[in-house]
Image (tube, rainbow, N blue to C red; front, side, top):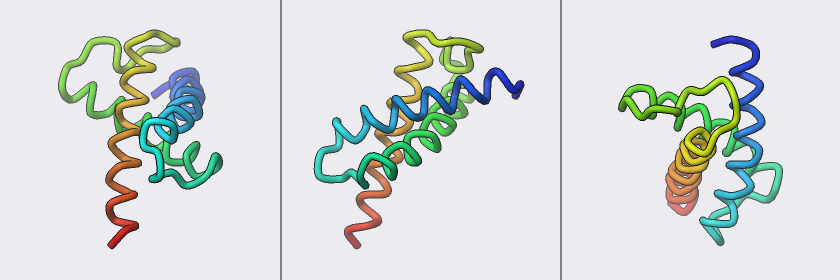
Length: 87
């Protein structure tokens, strides 16, 4: 992964964490926690997207596909973390 791709996924993670916190209401960890989960989720979404062959999941720039991939990864991760946190 190039430095540019890494920076793009970090920025997407920030946006994805914020949006995921809005989608999973009550399951959030505050703005900082959601951003961290979003960053991890964006990498997870990018990795899963690449494995599933979803085009645009690993893009060197901002696109609708990369934002959607990052947000979905962050939502899934935030949902799983909130389930584990309740136990």
